[in-house]
Image (cartoon, rainbow, N blue to C red; front, side, top):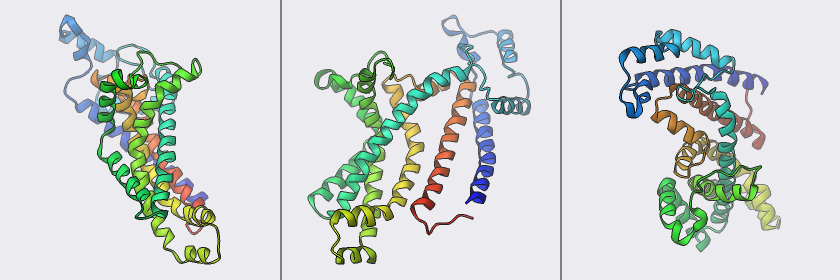
Length: 317
């Protein structure tokens, strides 16, 4: 196991380097740059002013020099400064990261609380009205985009559900916990809903396969209670596909937070990313891409380790 962990950690390095180069190249291949947006209502900047601004941020150098310098700064924990505000990006990330983490944790909890129990019940009560209702609900959650539901909810909220109206200001979790939970409840529900649909489908399929195994029939024949058969013998062996879905949901969760934070004006990293991308603030986009990539890589690594814990037959060497 130790050798496998070391090997996986080593393999993270080329993956991260490849991702950073891809993001770096894409940002510089996009038409125009941030200097095209600095003029605002006063019109475009002249060529001399643009050249001075680009030189200030080191964008007048060749790509290789810029990339090596950026990687060296990353290794020191320096993400650079915003080309608009001039503030260190690290400071902005420290303010916005806890907000996105809060939204992501709530969404993941909703995903697990809704998806896993309904998937298990659908499998255990196959072809019952529980099963048909759960399958229909899962398909509906997968088919309807969460941003469409968010926009529809905002349109109808003024008349039917005032609690779903986006608040103009974000109440901090430690400043006003009750107001914060009210603010985050509906965005987290929308973010976790699509993942819950996947969880229902995969959980049901995995549980159905497990419940047909010989050791489950043996447990029934011994007269064990239904709860013991399902939770102790069935669920534990069905957890590997469920954990896989959790790992696959994390990249979708990142994309979901970008959309939901923008719609509900949540000052998290997703909204920060959209503003930076629209304004060609390339240093912010590059920093966020690195963080998102790290989240995906580490989450997949944790899922692989969880396999060996859940199933002792799986051994890594």
